[in-house]
Image 1: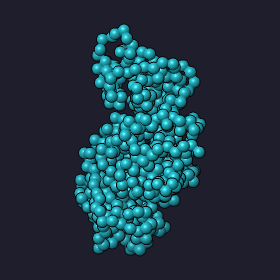
Image 2 (image 1 turned 30 degrees about the vertical axis):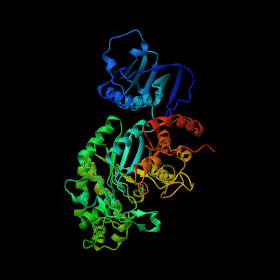
Image 3 (image 1 turned 180 degrees about the vertical axis):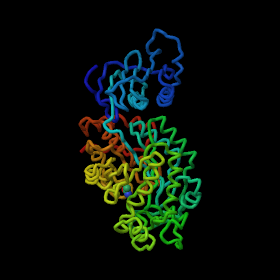
Length: 496
Ligand code: ACM
């Protein structure tokens, strides 16, 4: 075995030593592993696994086997693994099933298009426990099969968390059995912004859709088999116009009939501060928590305009009754009502960084999005922090200012800048955001997400010093696998 080679592995493993030879795994190579891992191997590597029962023969290429097993190994932590590819087959060990799942993804990346695996010895473990990818399915309801595909692409890059932004002013995508109008009414709008939202134009083309609880449970199970957790987001008390359209008594003027919002941007209309509105969202969270077993539920809290509360006698009464200093404290109050309820369900809340000034609920994690300075601010306040600073991780931003660049909310965020992000050690991890206002099709989502999400995956996984030219070379070697999977990534720009 010799020093690290430029094997096209992304994220880059902790240590790689390569040998001279290659191993050919036939489609019926034997697979010996805990049942769910064996199933993942067969699915991921397209093996039938028939060879596991085959009699021993003299030819090692025919008896080549994959053996993956659990073993105590403190060095590997909760997600690490060891992998050896040699003449007689593949051996992998990990302390956890999570580690074995990542070993499978490494095998998937190692296998060339000719089906051969280079002889290699890998010891690997992630830098951060939170390696997230956020996807906005509220602005455009991306089809369910795409969510399966997206989960698979996250797993391929060892990203372990899908943050699903399920509700917003422009659409409600989560079926709530107790409140069916949320999807019947809130799931559909009668037009959308055209061009950049600052132009103020809309069309009259209806759009809508939602996911049933059964569909989401199955997605959660599919993701779990690949080591991906799904964190749902119900964004409150702002970004709620679709819910107010469905149930006008949630708003601050019950006489007003609001449509599900067509335009991008932030609605002025927010939830009122009544007990009934709080109870409503708590009921929603009960159903959310029942569908999504992950320990965190994101409750939003971003971009909440104060105007309606400032003008509301009911809100003023709430301020007085709770002993708050003014309507601007109602955001923190709202988030506490929801976070306390989640705590009763055994879950932790996640919130956007606006809550730092408004009172982060006890036990909540903060998603610092308004720049790296907000990450530092959250850490200085001693908060559990996921780094999602927009200037490095908002993957809906344009990658270049070339004239043929598809319309984007803003820019610029080239691949090299994502790759160059250096998070603070103290964060829980990092997350890439894909807001979908300007991504009405799954083709555009893939174009924006890849390969920048691959770069972010490496930022979250690899503790080693980053080297963009070396990453670019490995990425060039990785793209044929994305091609084979039909991923519509944005082609690489040459390094300048
Ligand atoms: C956000 O981008 N409004 C969290």
